Amino acid sequence: MDTIAALATPPGKGGVGIIRISGDRAKQILEQIAPHWPTDTPSHLLRLASLRQDDGSLIDEALVVLMQSPNSYTGEDVVELQCHGGPVILRKALDRVLSQGARHARPGEFTERAFLHGKLDLTQAEAVADLIEAESEAAHKLAAEHLEGGLGDKIKELLELLVQCMMLVESALDFSHEEHVYQIEKDEIKRRLDKVYSELEQLSARFDAGRRVREGIKVVVAGAANAGKSTLFNAIHGTDRAIVTDIAGTTRDFLEEELVLGGVSIRLVDTAGLRETMDKVESIGIKRSLEWTRKADLLLWVVDSSQPLEARVSKELEQASMLGVDTFIVRNKCDLACGLTAQDEQLLARFDHCIEASLGAEPPEGLEQLKAALEEKAIALTSSEGVLLSRTRHYEQVIKCMRAIEQALTALGLGAEHELLAMDIRDALDALGAIVGKVSTDDILNRIFGEFCVGK
Image (cartoon, rainbow, N blue to C red; front, side, top):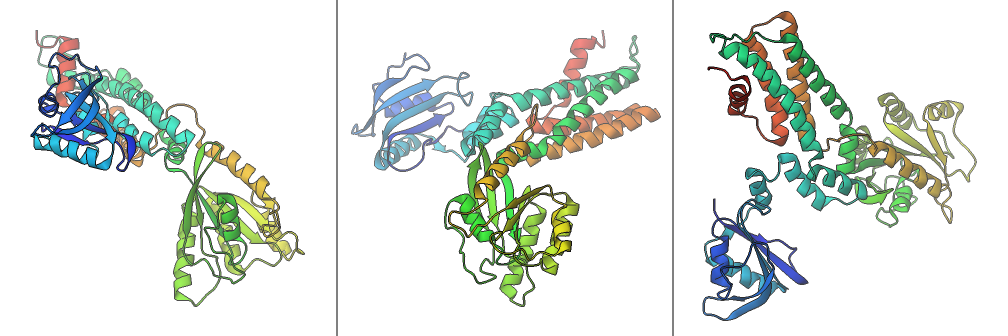
């Protein structure tokens, strides 16, 4: 592989800037740019070195460490130059490294090499990115658990059971001509397949909790035009991000901001108010509002309690109640005389959470109660026991594996040809193996020869 190099700290001025080099030429490049570097320096020893241009002029006095293969992040020889964090220094140092035969690393290439050299599985490699991107305590905790191998170990445990199933089937298939014929062990295969399926079923059921931890909970503020949605959005976020006027239809597109409640990331979305309109732009905004309400994890539905619900709002509330989306009804303008009809009250009573508020008051009434309820709900939506899936890629592969196991169990029950059973188990292996890294045919055969002593 090529030797790669890149700036490993954010661009700009700082106390320290780190340049990372990885590959077969890393040590040679170090010796070229730091001419007085002692060649007998032990691996992983941090020491001061003078980085110099080809003509001997000084670039910087830096702390330098050589981490020799395989005991490094990438599994290759790795050099890190801890320079002073000036942009000119870092540019000159990196240019010098590149002039000695390294090339610019692609985004994520250091972690890619860590995976290729067996230092990380795919779930751990993805966890590195998640750890960097984490904006809440919950997201950080989940990424750290994945980086430590929590998810990968669980997947490998299930892969082991599938590999055992495959060994039993392949033994009956490929070596039936041998002196000791291996008959298919249906009960043993079924027991293992049932175990894997049950574990995957539990994993898939917890996916939404993991996704919400990683991506944030989508909390959508919805309701009629001029009900107080933007006022609520600003109050929860603590800014004047949304324009607030007494003119209906001010918000024509969605606004999205992030905040953290109870250690959980919240993606708060303000939407255009629902009403009948001939305005083309506002109509597009309303259409987008409805799309957001259907993909929300939690709805904050703001109702102007001083007047009856409009027909369109009632229709959408009916649909929200039938879809089962978690919904908080915020009955705004409770300082005014109630204008809701008996039918409106019956509709609102369908929802478990109803908070009375007067968001235009000083200070806003009901806001603290709503924020406390929102925090409690955010924690509940992200709480789950056991290993969590957090990426759609993982979830999709788990579902594929489950479908393949269902087919394998059907084939087993019908007494289908061993070849068909083997295909279904192979599909299950491929799907699950894609989460952490592929399981090859050689893996299966090596286990058969090693554990079954076939062919002697």
